[in-house]
Amino acid sequence: MVELLLIDDEESIYESVKLYLEPPELEDDPFAFLDDEPESEPEPEEDSGGIVCKVHWVPAGTQGLQMVEEAITPFDLILVDMNMPPGWNGVQTIEQIRAIDPKVPIALVTANMSADQTIQTMLTEHTVRLFHKPYSKTQLYALVEEMTA
Image 1 (cartoon, rainbow, N blue to C red):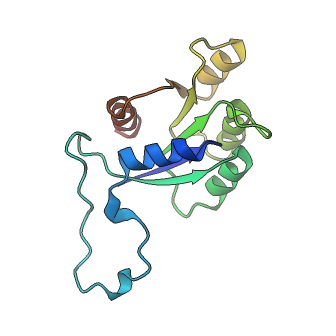
Image 2: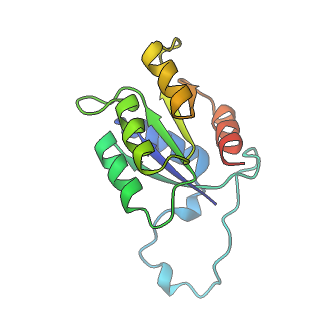
């Protein structure tokens, strides 16, 4: 199972990523301890290419950095939105995360189709993938599969 951290100020983006990537049986169940059935691996969606994710979400870069710092096991993939007012933007967030974890796969998600020099430098120096909004379910599956293979 892929542990994915989404850093995006829009909760609706989180809801759609969770809907696409996280099977309903992974939702927190306060009565799960009463279940007599043995734990089984969640089933992937038919068109997901076998990808199953647990999606963790925070709305700001500083909170994302804290999640990375406090993670017991490293995240398998981090998706970072470029614009997250009023705090850090995606570039600042990625720079801070890279200082702690130089290897975690990161995708910078943006609606801007052109990347300025700052973004180009960050993509190269920090080994970050650029991922454009809007994206389809299929494109998101392909990104996760490619970056976590």
